[in-house]
Length: 134
Image 1 (cartoon, rainbow, N blue to C red):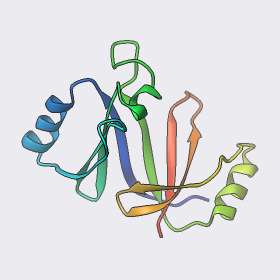
Image 2: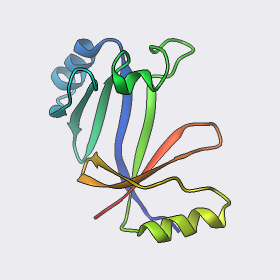
Image 3: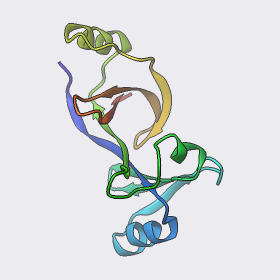
């Protein structure tokens, strides 16, 4: 059984980066933690123990998520659940019990720093990233 500790991060897609940064940083009090290149298009904001990732839709990362957010295009790319420590083997065995193929684990940055995580889809097609605590 997976032991969810909390939400690690969410990823929001935008075509209004400055407005989003003003809202989340100035209005809500988040702080910019990391920024990637303009080409990659990712800004990570600290929100307590979690992160809010803002991805510009016409960037490398943003284009992978489809068109700009509208009534028919998503602005939520994915969310990440932070799990109590679990090995790659244990999480793979967990998903095999439910006939869910486990994709490859990869090293990614999250609210706890770098660590291994895996992406899965829920029945509605939403992307859920699962990250084990170190």
